[in-house]
Image (cartoon, rainbow, N blue to C red; front, side, top):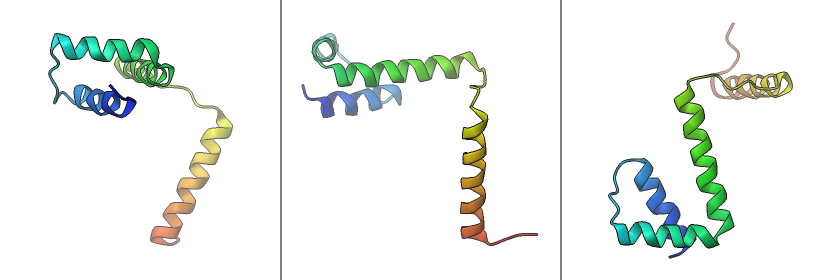
Length: 84
């Protein structure tokens, strides 16, 4: 099992388009047990799902909010021009 195979299957599983056999689950578990990068990806996905299920807004730093709004305004102006 390679990282690419695990990540492809993981995306399909999250999308609900993959049913795994016990043997396949064992292969994925074995890969995860020895692959720190894949462990990190799976942990991040789990964390994201938990945040989504909680339904609570994630607070952003005001500096990040300001930078994001400025970037969005700039892209809007580049794409649609200044609207007044």
